[in-house]
Image 1 (cartoon, one colour):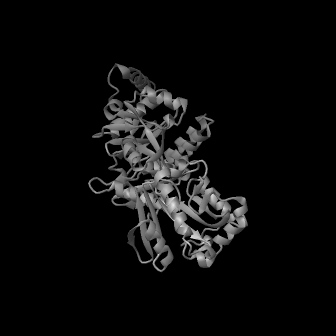
Image 2 (spheres, rainbow, N blue to C red):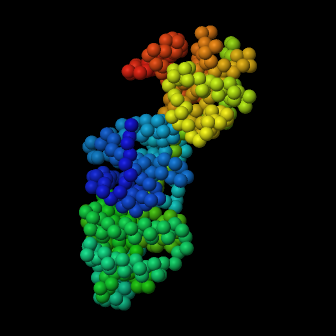
Image 3 (cartoon, rainbow, N blue to C red):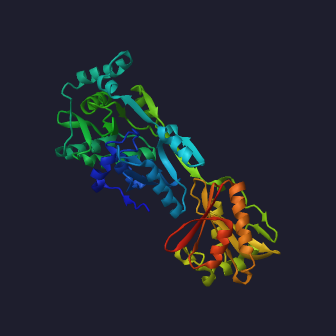
Length: 467
């Protein structure tokens, strides 16, 4: 299973191996964004089949992956997605992708039959041709040229140059003055400035493209970017606004110095800031880069309540309050549950109350992670059948356990077969899976009567049923 490592500066060379050749162009597919926003998104990385896999942590959405980044000619994106799916199944979370390149959306839509897709205007990146920002040629850029000409007249001693590690004190002095004139009250805008200041400490790093505008020994504008594929991704563009025309002067100078041989310049999103949006639009972007969020769903996502299923002798439905004592007895039967392959003590959170197991089952259904069917014989609770471990590609696992005093009468087989039928032909699964221990002869006999063998390992026999 994928093993993730938190991102920090020490892994820059490894991460840049992927980002430097990445063709997705969106700003999230860059080292600078990961480092700048690491306290916010808490990104982690793993390598899989020649691909970089990034896991972010969203307060709203939970675990969110970037789309895998393959090494050209080496990476296997589908195999990396398989590893992501396996990780999600083991963790009990849906595969969710926070920033999907628009060209890769269809691949995920085909992979996951049930998805929620959206694209937020606030986070679309602004893309410009490298030539247009370097030259400001043509009538449509006359305004920018006029601003630059005025800047040169007002500040004839101003020069653009590259930043180096020797400029750290000068950069600190810039930030000190910038904070004095920064007048935005928005909390996200203030946070962005703090993160930008920290990222500027990467001046001198091999991956960082940096520049500044200097006036009589004082920095009045600074910038930092990196090259990702054919795109210069600009992470920081800050200037002291009292110097009229400094922004267009900086934009043109920085583009000209750092975009040779590149096709695009990505000046990132505006996060809904009106001033940023106005400014970025004034530079006439060629297009806005949409960021598609894809959240995989499983077949339970459309199920409001647990249905009632009937067999010749049994009734299967949702767990009830009056089932609590019997359900607790089933869940606490250690001898019986060793064949279940799960020990509640491994995941026990808090105190083991009389409501614990019932609430866990209900919460799993609320989260659409599992559905627990109570098995009833003449109204008496005798066991449960559980559909769980959804793989979000049309597959899930089915398990069944019966009180030992009701074993040996075929009730488990009858309940298992009915839930399997409902799962495949009503719920809409493509593939149903089950397993049992080698030494569990009763379960082996039941599964052989309902499903097809699908291999084995040292511990389990595996079975499947497909439509």
